[in-house]
Image 1 (cartoon, rainbow, N blue to C red):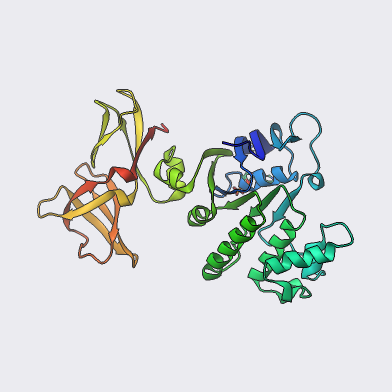
Image 2: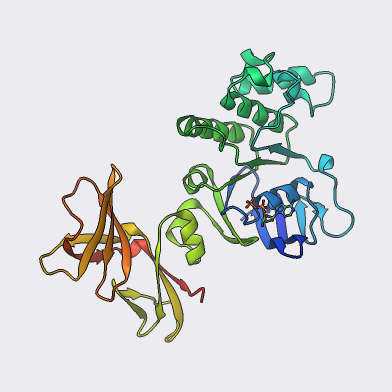
Length: 344
Ligand code: ADP
């Protein structure tokens, strides 16, 4: 892979004795790509973003942009020298400045109004150039905030939950617009979100965060198909976990034997099973009982009970005439099953 434009190595930040926010985070951003940083609340996403922007110091580790060390050896580079554009969750537009003045704020030179207008026009907001933030819709405010972040041609654009304040329908439209704007500008972007679907939709690279570390990176498809751990798998959707030992190149689970050719005999592993992995076959004297059936419209979400009493989630396209209490057999689709080292 080419040289990353931004490299974060071993980033550590502790706010106080009880709160290690970053515990050795490593991440690389490739030029012109969008990375989605996905993690639960409190996992350190905002702290990492703020550290990249220079708004939060690091206790240890380094942040390198191109050939320049922003944090690490020597004094940290101050925020205004980092060539970072930021879109905050609440957009943080200046209320007393109109849209064009907001976008021109970080620009220098006699043509800054002209460049700001061009940036607004690229966001299809040229006609709102003289409007004040309170005269703009939530979506328009977000677009002005993005135009302001992109205007100085930053090395990195950081977006902190940029769609969270918007209703669902508007969100997917604005998401598509935001990606188009970032791509048109050739920007390198890091977007923080706690919404898995959103992360999958926007990302060239997905970075999963947990406990102050990056626990997995990869393309959305790769991370979805090959989660590195139960924690990583759970961030992207429902998953049930069976922990067991490898014998004869496989693990015996309540759902049947699962191949584990990459693991040593006796090794403790986690078998991660997505609901889509389990196909349910009605059978009078089946080995499993359906304990729950619920239609979500497009699919039927089920829970089934195995002979050992364990419960597993399964899903199948709707409509289908399965009912709670039915007896079934199953087929396991290994594509949606992953074996990883056990988390213990
Ligand atoms: P996220 O963005 O993933 O929700 P944060 O980076 O905001 O996570 O927070 C990581 C941890 O650091 C959390 O435990 C949070 O409570 C704590 N934290 C964040 N900001 C501060 C702060 N200014 N002072 C003390 N603790 C903080």
